[in-house]
Image (tube, rainbow, N blue to C red; front, top):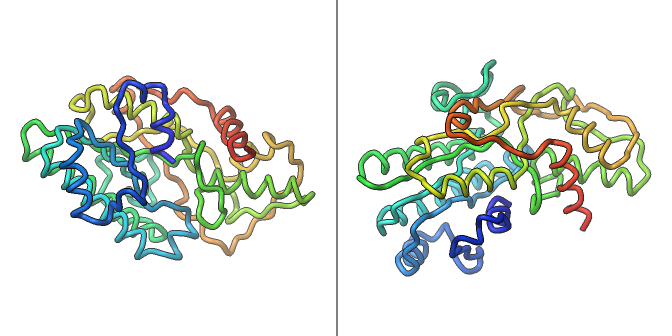
Length: 293
């Protein structure tokens, strides 16, 4: 999703973009990745690939989420470094932060507490990629290898399968089905009070292209988000309003909900001089339009 939003952004027109498909380049194949980087000699690598999914997907396949993301991160970052690529922007995840914190999550919070068990494998892989970029930037002069940590994302090109998707696209799919089938009830996992921060993916693309103009000016690790969050119920209500659905919600208290709250501290982002331009209402409307196409 992030890669497609990057390519659709207006600033992409100023770059000669290499974006091989999975069929063209298997990022889990170390030799293939190294050969590709050697042949293409890019000025900048944006590592946005990964196996991603919501709670259900992470619980069902913890091995895949750890190993596949670990392999892709290691292969891309090391190939870039070994072939002399001067700049790399690594996309990490707010899942890397410890669970149970009652404050907005700061970059310095990483590795200071227990991870959320439901997505621990994914988080561990992203932590290692982040540290690898730190080490390369520290030990290789002239290498601007930086990590950005987006909050949760939604938007165009998202996955809408409720079993594999993140919260907002899953809600869009569930409520759209209720509208289509004439259902007057939609299930919510948990009691709806857990809070999440979701940013429109095109806004992340905007921030990344801004960083690509001068990667060395990026902080070594930086959160990218809104600095504001909503309850799970509020996301359901926002989607229901956008779709004109007026049914009721049923709460399944037996289901896992993950962390109670996960909000990014965006102080570094603000000092860097960027903020997300898209409101929740506009982002949901655009995502619904894409889903309905």
